[in-house]
Length: 324
Image 1 (cartoon, rainbow, N blue to C red):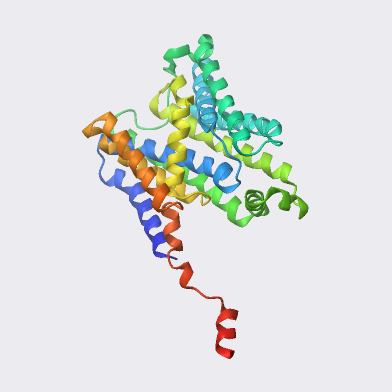
Image 2: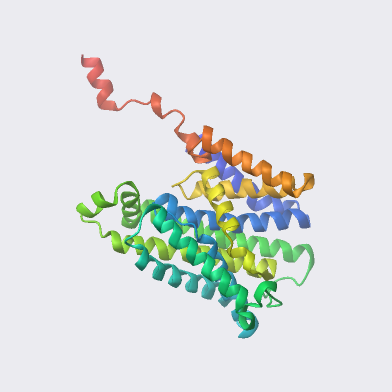
């Protein structure tokens, strides 16, 4: 295991246990929201960074999952535990359906279609007053049941539940991408879709799978957000949400899954920690951090593990040089 991976594992351990060992309301709040953003950033990376299908509309799937869970709990009395599954399923179905018209599109054309979808979801949420509450959003729909009622014990329990769900989601993505045929197909599509088709890979099936899995996990992140924040408004579907997610993914390292998740934890903590110096200044600072990484470390935090790759020679090259 490389030093960077050891660092990532150590950081994950700190992220998991620090809010429990230091049970301060502010720490627990920031940590809970950070892990939700980690799942959202990793889900975007699965589709765009790992499979190469550029999406500017991930905020739409995030909002769709949040609104579905909130509306089901408020209007239908559905348990939040079932709302989690329902929100993720609805987002996955919509994402899968979005994949069909997007199959013939690539690059900026696909990005525009996904951006239009997110805007459509935002406009629907803003104008469907009876279900979504319109511009004021939807609230008073309940939260996780069976936990301590109030105080630090409840905040700790909620954090551990959210962290466990996010960890399972990121772990599932890593398994699919690294241990299954689908992961190899995703990489082939990203590198050269035409060549992948010529090699017998059914790109249509795997692109639809990537759309469905990515949007479903983004919807799951939205349900966690809804039940934790207790308010869902149309602002969650704006382009600003997607922009922040893309920044987190770039910061962490595209095409790695764990990199964007790790980057989201750090970038969200930086963003919230700098609020003490002013809302505008913290956004400027986050923007500068992203710019520095794009220019000087385009592979993000995950790219640090490639620092010694140029010094490694293949075994056959070494033998050839010795025999010459």
